[in-house]
Length: 301
Image 1 (tube, one colour):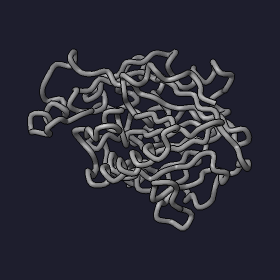
Image 2 (tube, one colour):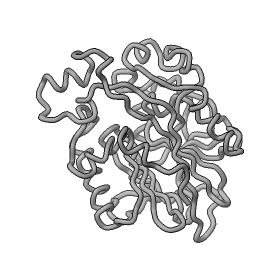
Image 3 (spheres, helix red, strand yellow):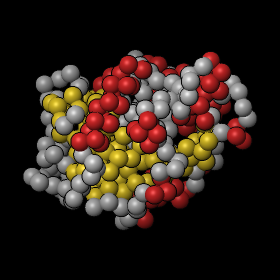
């Protein structure tokens, strides 16, 4: 591997669970990334659309602005939890220091100091050092950018995702310097004995042992992508991450231009859509849906 940090195996639920616990969910808009329209939905998947998705065609002024989210989850006894980290403060002034030379060339980011996760937490009376747990859906540079801002947290990542992020580099969407910090990293093996099935999902992990936060193996977008299922006061909330960029993917099966493994992506998407069919009351939040984001509430109890 090309990183110095070695995660510990996560084999048991983290401390802090409480029987029957429910959580509060705060969607946090951290900024936007520009991407060709074909990147999100590849259409007929012809060669021209794939080249467009890679940025080979079309001026960036015509690209779509995709919301980049993170999520604050408040657990009554396990404390503040984040899902992904948003952008590092340095990205406000330029991308290269945090995303590397290739990231600065390939990606166009729009963000502000007010949109940084730390700033949004402080608006809610939470300091970055109060964050006890960070769940990484995956380690792409728009999700792991601000890992360094939460040194007191336990970070939870799929074992396969850590291995991919540590070894594959910018061509696969990673910049290991973002997450190669000597923090409390825990790697979850979805083939291990602590894994069980839940609802329509073949592999899940009860993070606190109380059913309030469940991690779901949804590979395909990346080798070890995971989604997050939350138990709110009156319903469940499914944070899809990049297992589904948009509601069109959830409704119509519109596929993105690029996946790590299309077979696994389709299988994960089937598990998600079947869950939503069986649980119509659930709140589902896709990973980068510009049309859906303005309709989200500030907080869900």
